View 1: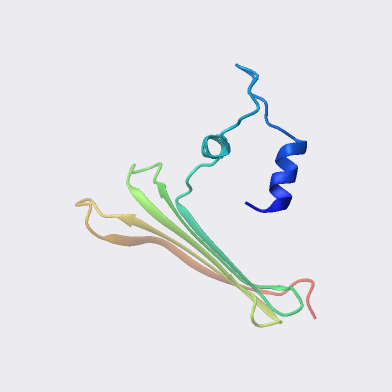
View 2: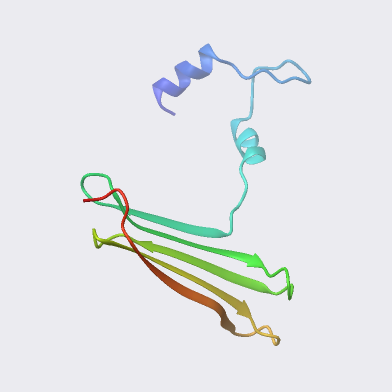
Length: 115
């Protein structure tokens, strides 16, 4: 543990609301507040800090067929004059073996707020 964390722990003890003990189990506290997400996201920035690419992929359940789907969104701003948006939805087939594309589109728009 770092000295800064140990000093913070001494100055701000966590007190149990049930028994009043200040010997808190930090790992149990963190475990109760974190959840697992079934998605992946990635952002790429240039040297100045402008967002160039944004990618997100997540798993979900189709409301219509109740089958698992994979939703992919990709925003590409690498060209300063246009923004390319790619959206794709893949659904598990009726046999539960392969994913097939049920929706896909690509939008290309004029870029905003960039020179």
